[in-house]
Image (cartoon, rainbow, N blue to C red; front, side):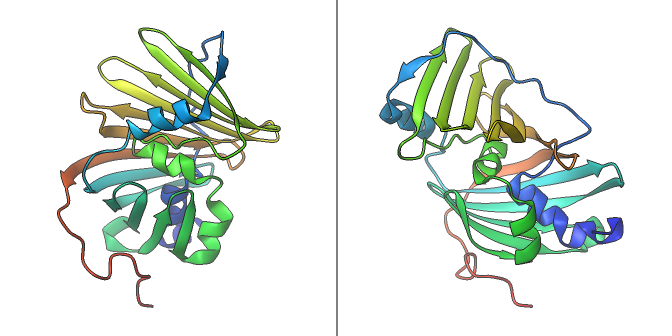
Length: 234
């Protein structure tokens, strides 16, 4: 894709999907001593990261790769527990794109082709918002926890998903996703005292590219417009 076209299509996909990474590395804490754990315990821990009320979130984004940089604004309308409408615009309101994420899949995305090409893994999207996804059926689960760090690893054959939560001020959530042993993407999200995202970075080494997100508003949503879950008109 040409650099000047990126805000119109690819960026929405990248923000949504987590396909971003590259020129700014993320160091994921890696405690040793992971022990076998029950998938139900992992799922219970994941649910503690989900807000109790639907949210409307606004943010600014900055995307960088070896061809240059671009930025803009975005909005997430999030209906508990795991339905989210994402809208992204490029500089000066250009390049509008949108997607509806339901769990770990996209119900629809516009433009579809770019989203399909650039979204490596939807748990990365949720991690940008500070949310952990539970393990898939059949995954082997391992866990480590101390006073400061909690780590969960889900494994299905050679594919692994590593979540690390670090307490502190700010708190941090890390996610690294590997498929067949190769890194697909890594997220580092900084959290406030209530667990809400303050800023996030997504790195995808295969591009390479990097997405930085700064959250500007995160408020309770009492209702959404009737067209919130439908694709935008052409």
